[in-house]
Image (cartoon, rainbow, N blue to C red):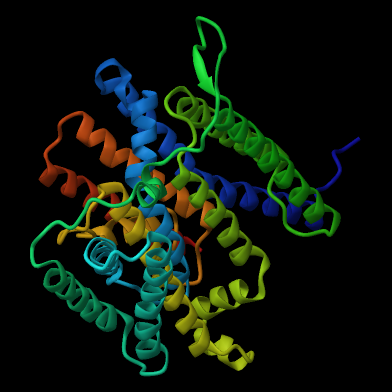
Length: 405
């Protein structure tokens, strides 16, 4: 008997599955790149210093500001805009916080609230000019970058202001208290809270991913291949538990990591499950179509900038708390790291495309790269060359993918 002919439906199904594999593998290529760069620095650093518990903890604390602001920058870029003023906002908010606590003796809880309001107000003011004044975001935020960098210098007059109360410092340098437990001569003494959070987080992530996949299949929606889903989640689980174990070996779970985890969960919900998140993506994908659909685009643009200012204010507090002082140079070039983290994380330069988890991976990529280059003694100017090349490559990949699509 002759072999049965392939029906058009079967052929189309196979082609669709092939495209689905390609699309998802392209998304997870960033994760593979992160693992490769971690392995690279693991091999070339002396005594594998890049994965030492103390270095993992320092990596989290040194790059927390990138993750915090990248979440806000994601929404700004997805909406089709850019914010160049975030680094100067960080410096200005830190200067205000230091001046209030040291010179005016204002209690730090009040200072934290005031500085968050100031950061949000800065973003909102720029959002008004972009959304309702119709001024390009590049021009508005470039002006904001110069204005707030100058105000920071005038406020501090070239001086370092500090130190701060221990409670304020704990925002960036504190750890969740816990009893250490000795797990034997091989595993040593570890912090149970940090290890438990890592294990529970990995289990929850795995369960939620499987639940979402099952719901998509049940509702006949597009779902990634099960093998790829399981492979991805196993890799993520190993990374999460590994980082948690490294933190547990040192001092435990940093307070700032808890803050970041809450923010990541919140913004992941906003971008994937909320109406406003879907409208921001529609705005960046096709603004005219979004307007014709009844979306109030000006309000969305305003909200994305106000949100960016709020997160920049939070990052300013974290940076000041970590340095235990307000400095005139705080926040210099931060906007470059944040924007680079977004583009490396797959956010489209033309708007409408980007994922929270990919941006977090992009921020980790930048952090690991900065940390690794410092450990091997690469000069600061060569570090800038490498980061520039990586950024160009990331945007090049985005342009290539759009042309193929």
